[in-house]
Image (cartoon, rainbow, N blue to C red; front, side, top):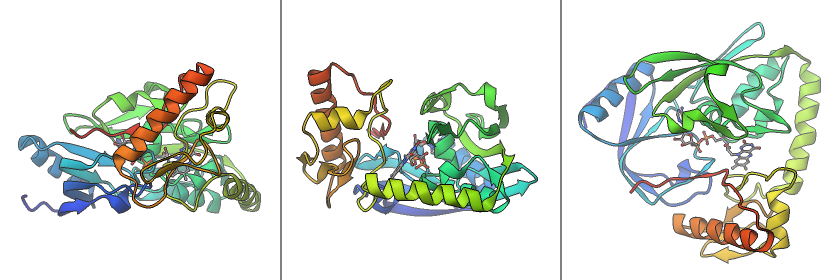
Length: 292
Ligand SMILES: Cc1cc2nc3c(=O)[nH]c(=O)nc-3n(C[C@H](O)[C@H](O)[C@H](O)COP(=O)(O)OP(=O)(O)OC[C@H]3O[C@@H](n4cnc5c(N)ncnc54)[C@H](O)[C@@H]3O)c2cc1C
């Protein structure tokens, strides 16, 4: 592939450490983006040469496929966060925990929940990530995206259709570049206390010591996916290296060498058994990637 400034390319790269399930997978090209110009130039090159590409955040909400005969692009060099009074702007490759910490360190409140999200700002905008009755769109003012013609567009929050763990960006070929938030003045000590309480609760209830991609299914209205799965007797159910967590039934964990198919088959089994027993059609929160 041609030399382009502002990117780093690896060929035949393993993606095992780039998805939180730690599923073995590889891509023909892995591209680390260091500058916006680098991103635009590599996209031009990929489009001209009809090479498929996929934008990967922290890989914490996906069931990755085995092999991608194209380019996986990581925006990990685009991670600047700036704070001006109560306006916080973060580039898409910044981690949610860094965004949360930067806000708290400036005595701003609203993004404490984001400290526990092991994803990027870009991936979290696309999926409208959230926790504790908050979601990323709550404090959002606007985003910048790169559209299919490689033009940068600014979209106000209301120009993006968003609902619980969903946005219409999922259906668009756009790349999120940046997000701007307006936060309230807060108190660092109070924010840190809130974070510590929640951290303890997460450690007690979630299998954070094993590779996973967080909640598998969305909670149905007025119920919990975990309760339905547990009542089907599925805690500990295994397919290959994938297992329904013993700690939290709405988590699937990798016990060692889970393949993409192990996780997908276990998701299907859980879905079908809950449907059969309760008539509830659980909706996936994670995204199954199909690169064929
Ligand atoms: C232990 C654990 C706990 C979790 N807890 C929560 C929780 O409380 N709440 C919650 O909402 N989620 C939670 N998650 C899930 C996950 O962290 C979030 O959904 C996160 O927002 C995903 O971001 P990501 O960068 O990992 O996206 P990825 O998984 O890498 O990508 C998700 C999708 O976004 C696309 N994408 C990524 N970046 C961009 C971009 N810049 N432009 C366009 N498209 C892009 C990808 O192509 C893909 O389609 C948890 C996960 C784990 C492992």
